[in-house]
Image (cartoon, rainbow, N blue to C red; front, side, top):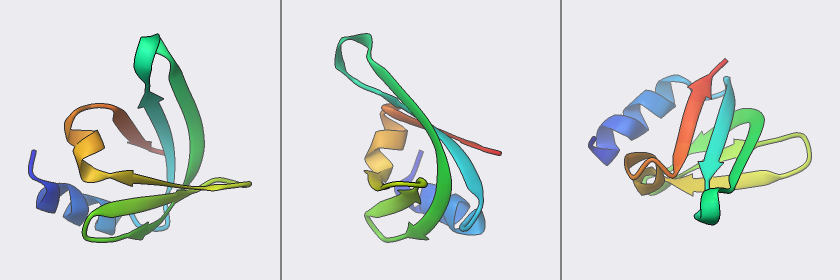
Length: 70
């Protein structure tokens, strides 16, 4: 996947609810639901009810982060 293609796809879904799964070390997984708030050239921002999390496009490419649009 190309980061530019990922950014274009995320831009089309800006403002929508997403389910995010973050795969960490030692088989730890974090899952939460939030809103795709902003899309920048290197990162994108997910806002949950109580926090703001940022991720890079390389995390999607390496499958450390998986997004599902709700």
